[in-house]
Length: 231
Ligand SMILES: [Zn+2]
Image 1 (cartoon, protein in one colour):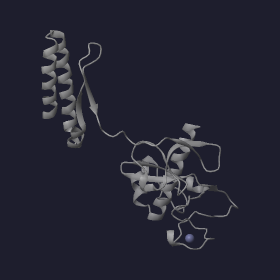
Image 2: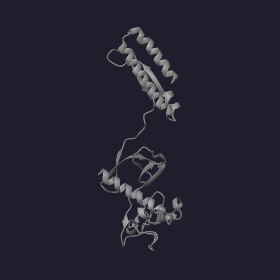
Image 3: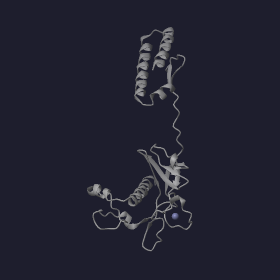
Image 4: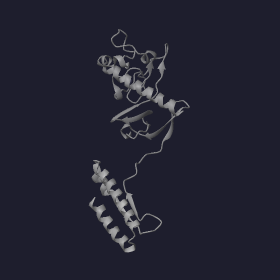
């Protein structure tokens, strides 16, 4: 803040040499107040010190047509990669997303990311990285593959293993998408969570396995949602 005041003081001296018109002094004062107001706002920001050290008042020679002071922020521009149209699985439908290699590269910037090493879409909201893709909804007679988590997880070495591993996309059963209250005797393949009138009771009855499947399913739904919006 003191640096800014000092810079303005120097500019004021220069202006006085050129002209003593009231208009010029008024413009200067308005600019001065505005800059201090902006600086004060930045002050409230917890990153203020870092930002202020980058904020410099660049002085330009007086010109009657253009403003003679230009505030230049040297803050690095946000390094946002371009959005690329990514096909949703093998379809012709696409989602625009930022391509990253790993989940750890997903940023909380309001944009969909595509994790190339996992073939998953992802967003980071409230500190949570959620990721997934659209799985198959299996019907009677289909092979029941990639529905339940493999006990060995990422350590699984069985190439023919039909269970779900961390970087694979989960498949679902039709009844996974049908709600049944957790207080009624339906098996866990139904969705027993999500109805507003019973959400607290249903929540207390969830087990970890079901929770994981539900989160994957909601991400599946979210990707369906954006697919509807963007195509
Ligand atoms: Zn396995």
